[in-house]
Image 1 (cartoon, rainbow, N blue to C red):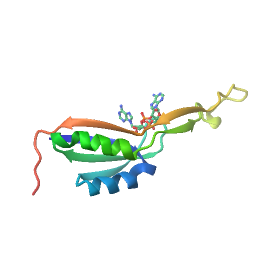
Image 2 (image 1 turned 90 degrees about the horizontal axis):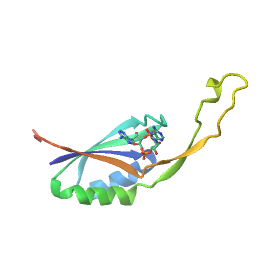
Image 3 (image 1 turned 90 degrees about the vertical axis):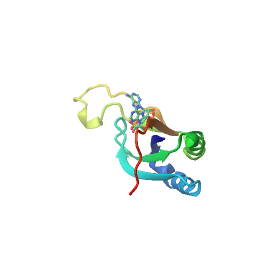
Image 4 (image 1 turned 180 degrees about the vertical axis):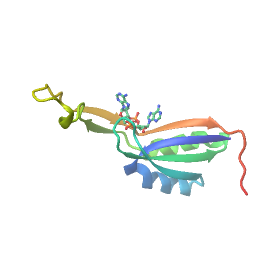
Length: 109
Ligand code: 2BA
């Protein structure tokens, strides 16, 4: 068994969770924050059988879009007076990031 830790954009969360429920996956959604953009995203903990990992990857890929987001390299307020302020840059975000971890034991009471 694996524990998939899947980080998705908040805009893809509802569409993806609907499809995961339909497909019979069991999972927990946690509100999280990206360390780089410091914006809200969603982290899903999904316990899956080894045989379901490819199905999960396809489902996530089909429901999570890649987007470009604009980032200010230095916050305007943080720049010293007269400093050169670099233009905002675009970074790609997602579709999604998934880590698969081996599970030693899974118990439900
Ligand atoms: P954030 O950390 O807010 O990162 C958003 C996007 O910014 C990333 O998209 C990536 O394209 C870019 N980025 C992140 N760190 C960067 C850096 N040091 N320099 C330049 N660009 C950088 P994704 O790679 O699609 O990641 C989306 C979100 O997934 C991340 O949000 C973070 O919450 C999570 N994530 C991605 N890789 C991770 C990792 N290795 N470990 C833990 N969380 C990760």
